[in-house]
Image (tube, rainbow, N blue to C red; front, side, top):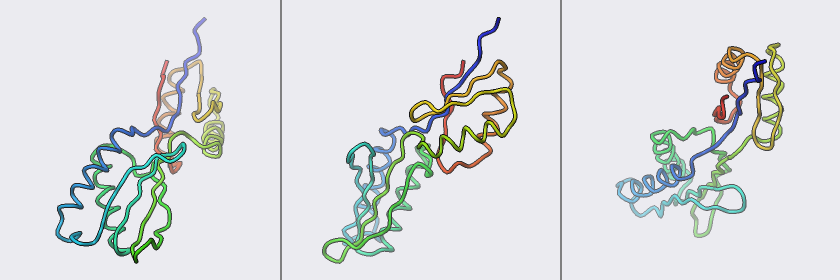
Length: 167
């Protein structure tokens, strides 16, 4: 008898690539004329379990401009912008502004339940189960698994998804 095939749905971000993108954005901001004397900076901090990117500048608009530069660098390094959860732009010390962008790693319980429900609603012969911060999908048919991956790709869950451990 054939063993069930399965794959895991995960949401992971390559932190080394994020670090590289932040470094590139910092260099570009330091060199660009429109950011001269604005005190603009982009830095990666790892507070607690979630890494965050803090963007600072002298005005709210400059913070938005810095975030655009950062997003360009992230896209070039194949990091999904969906992985960032932007906080509000807040006033900071000395009349400056700052924004904190949280980098989401893993699939939250709510998103995992949403994915499981989505797979069940497809009415295929497959089982989906939440395992920590990922979702495992199993089926006797590899074709069914391929269909599910295609369907998941075409649906927007608001987070970047990858498909791993396909066997």
